[in-house]
Image (cartoon, rainbow, N blue to C red; front, top):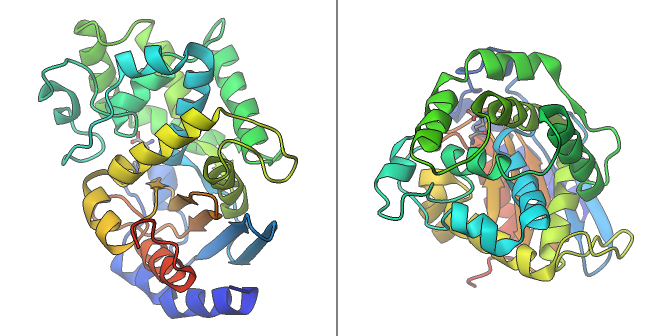
Length: 308
Ligand code: DON
């Protein structure tokens, strides 16, 4: 695929923004212009980035942060400890549902990509205090996205924190049931901040390229994460990356992916591509409406469906 073909597919799918709505449960996200669509594709075989549309617009990483934070938690604690705390089962419930824990007889959050599991993941990040923990997350995001410009979006952070009562209830429920350890307000402060970091589709494509490339950054050949953690995280993305739309996405698109309510989508095609998409209007599951349509076309065009 070349830039012209990507531009064409962006033009073809742009109108799908009209089928979605920007996230309105977080006031700062409700103000984002829905008429945006961009994509970046890191082609591992030819070692080049193809990008078009709004691929360099900064937007909130939101739930896509659950991927780098999980990778950092694994670096800090090892695979065993992380997956003793958080299961790896998909759920049919919305991302912020309390059902993502209680239905499970093992008394753990069901996977690291639903909010409960992501808050539990954040509770495992090493550091002296909330500030130190968030600084470590931010540095790791900059490294794995190869993007030194990543910063905290203060407006989104305050908006997240002000409206985060469901996340508070999930965290206190887990603490009360000994599913997590640590200070709940501190854990939540880090979680709200990690969601409020500004990224671009290009940076997300680079993160996904590391996952696709067995943990090695293709731009400098550094092993940023272990091959085993890259494999495991891609499989959880396949079963749970798009919440209660994961099954349908797997059938129609068929690539390990993760979404965020800022309108981002990341997709890691093993040994072939890292992809980042941005379009802020969301479908009813909280996933980018035009982004999914564009990704579907690109994956078809590249024969990148891993089940094909
Ligand atoms: O926890 C929340 O509500 C948000 N900050 C992140 C949720 C999110 O991105 C869900 N994804 N599609």
